[in-house]
Every structure is written in structure tokens, then in C-alpha cells.
Image (cartoon, rainbow, N blue to C red; front, top):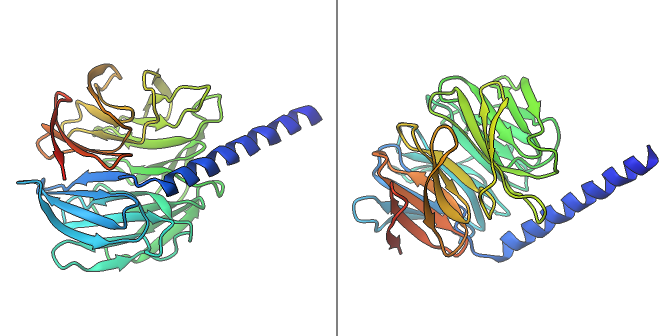
Length: 319
């Protein structure tokens, strides 16, 4: 028993060290962490650790607006019906916030860990905004930025992503495990996604709400996994073809194709079959479909913003 406990301690220390090295690496690099296409299809938002949130016009892909936000923007999410965007930050003097693009009003979100947050998402009606922070807190706000509820993600480990169910007020958080919660903060299910101690990075419900997909970090010994799960969080399929971690995942508007950001742009079907692959010179971090489902925007570790068609073919680089 003593040997087993010591082994567990060693594994835990290695995980902590790996996460610290990862954090240091992402601090030093200038990375475009995240991108999102507005629900009306008119604008594209890009953020990272470049001290600026940039908004591009979809018509000509020229810069439309920019907002100074210090250090790292980890994730951005447009409201499902309004011209406003939720912004998660970390290692920043600027708090996570909601920005109204029509008025340029910026509403700071209070109560989030000083270490910041990486998970943010609007629910399907746009009535609630969830923020999942780096101290294991899950916080729910209204569109005016009022804190409605706060609860723990079982422990204080940082949460890397959160996603609302497309038809119900339940959500998934990912970090060391996959966890399902209702809006009251009640834990519905908690599962370890693989036997190895590998951090999860991304999650997205399918448009139907009947299943969801997760992507993890992988490590030197274990490949990154893209995993399909049913609504009860029972594993349907694991895919290990990527050479890099799955930073972000997103379904096209019809729910027929899943685009993944990794060492390449890969597009899968609802069964987890690889349909298309677009080569990338560097690692992709952000990915988003347009309203019509015929264009994809990606952002990368080397600050490249690429427009692709739905065949995973590059159309242009956005400056």
C-alpha cells in the first residue's frame, strides 16, 4: 500500500510539473488561442495573448473593431442572438467580460479566480453565461453580468473547457475528468476518460444533444484522443490519429461535420470517421464555422489566421 501511495504521489507531481511547463510555454509564446464566428455570420472574433481582441468583417475580412485586453484571451463566444461576445481571460489585469459590439460597452464578470478562466459558453437561449475558471469554479451569469450561481467542479483543478447542452440547461466541464452538471450545480456524472493521467482540453455537444465529443492533450507516451460519448457519458468511439492535442472542436450548423483544431484541420462525421484533412504549417488552436457551413476560420500558435472552405482547402490568410 505504501509503495502504491508513493507511486501515486510521483504521478501527481509529474502532472503538476507538466502543467507548469505547459503554462510557462504558453506565456512566452504569442499565440492566437481562440476564434469564433458571430451567430449572424457578419463578424469573426480572434483572441490570444497579444493584448487585443480583434473583430473582423466577414464581407472583406478587414479589421472592423479592436478592444485592448491585456495578456491572454483564452476563449471567446458570441451570444446566440445578440451582437455581443463573452471573453474569458487569464494571466491578465483585465477580467473576463461581456462586450456589446453595438455600444462598445464592456461588462466585467466578478467572482472568477484571480488565475483567470479558460471555459466560457452561452446556453442555448442566451439567457445564461457559464464561466469555468482555473480554480475549479463554475460560475453562471445573466447577460448583464450579474452572478447568479457559483459551485465547485468537485475539486480545485483548473477547468479547460465547458459546453452547454443544445436543448437543456445542463453542461459539461472538462479538466482531469468529464463532468456533467445541471444549472443548479448538481453533479450528474463524473467519469475518467482514459486510464492514463491525461488532461482534457475541449468538448462540444452535437446539435441534437444525443452525444458529445471531447479532445485531450496527450503526452509523450500517449497520443491525443478524440472521443465520442453518448448523452449518458458512455464511450462510443476513440480516435488517435492526431499528432497534436485537440485545442478546440466545433460542429457545422447542420451538425453533419465536426471541425477539429490540432496539428491539422480535420473534419469528421457524426460517427467519428475522418472525412477531410487540411495540412497546417503550425498547430491550430482556434476553429469556427460560418453561418452557412461552407467556410471555416482557424487561428494558430504562430499567429496565423486562415480561411478554409468546407473541403478543408485553404482560401486565404487573414492579416
